[in-house]
Amino acid sequence: MADKKRIYIAYTGGTIGMKPSKDGFIPVAGYLSQTIANMPEFYHEDMPEFEIHEYNPLIDSANVSPQVWQTLALDIQKRYHDFDGFIILHGTDTMSYTASALSFVFENLSKPVIVTGSQIPLSQLRSDARVNLLNSLYIAAHHPINEVCIFFNNQLFRGNRTTKQYADGFDAFVSPNYPVLLEAGIEIKNIAGQTQKSVNTRLRVSELEAQSIAILHLFPGLDWQVLDNLLKSPLQALVLLTYGVGNAQQDEQLLATLKEASERGILIVNCSQCLKGSVNMEGYATGHALSEAGVISGLDMTTETVIAKLYYLLSQGLSNKVIRELLVTDLRGEVR
Image 1: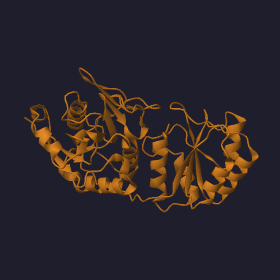
Image 2 (image 1 turned 60 degrees about the horizontal axis):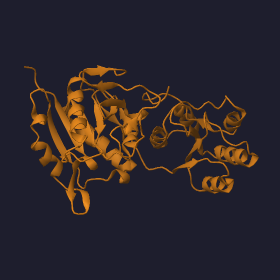
Image 3 (image 1 turned 90 degrees about the vertical axis):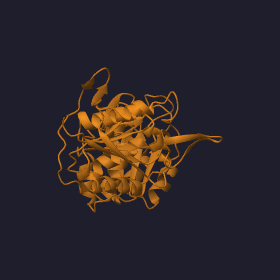
Image 4 (image 1 turned 90 degrees about the horizontal axis):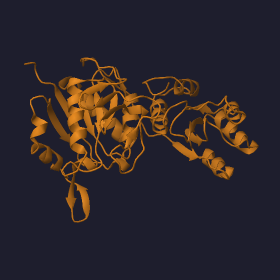
């Protein structure tokens, strides 16, 4: 019998490992490991060997930051040659941000990194955690796709293509502009994933630092003074959530404000408020006017990915011109 694959599980926090208490579910050190130890299915002969490392303190996903992403990346880099794959247990609220950020931070990734979690704790009767974690371990060992992914509700997604669509449903995540990589039904069905043999290449982890980035959701009647005040703050990048294929009001004050900010070096990225589809600023005069004002197209990237990509690019010491070019360039499969 071939040697079993070894998978590293980084338990950062989240619902999956919480314990019931009189005040509701709470994170408790050691509880997840104890719960898994009492579930024989995780030690089935077809399952890989695994090692669980619990972060201390456990992190609520609402408190995730670029510093946490850097810590996670360095943790995996440190153990990269000792394991065949990696599972990150994470809260669902910011899971897409973390998966997107890690996809950019890792260079020369040749082993699977799967981010997963659950909507109900593993210890509970109707939990989705058991299926999510069992499948993540099995797929990492037997169907490795060497990129940063999210596994949820029997689907493996490209991490930087996902967004959380459902606050309290098991189908919490969706990949609006890219097909799922694998489906875990009666059989593991490969849809758009490239299953590859894991190899011990040298993993490079790029620097990721906090940056001054903001999001502005456009709506009819928005006072442009709000935008003007925002752009006068010490801002490095602004993500504009616009209508449809990237349209905004054709307002002279708006366009002048955006152009002046862009000329000062603020990166302004145009993302659609729509879940599916791509920004096309040449389709309508309103979108074309934004392009003329120096606004950069977010194409078909999710908002989470644009934010993560901005963090990554702004942390690399690149010129404004190069960052503008790379924002519309496919670096990790994040854009069409």
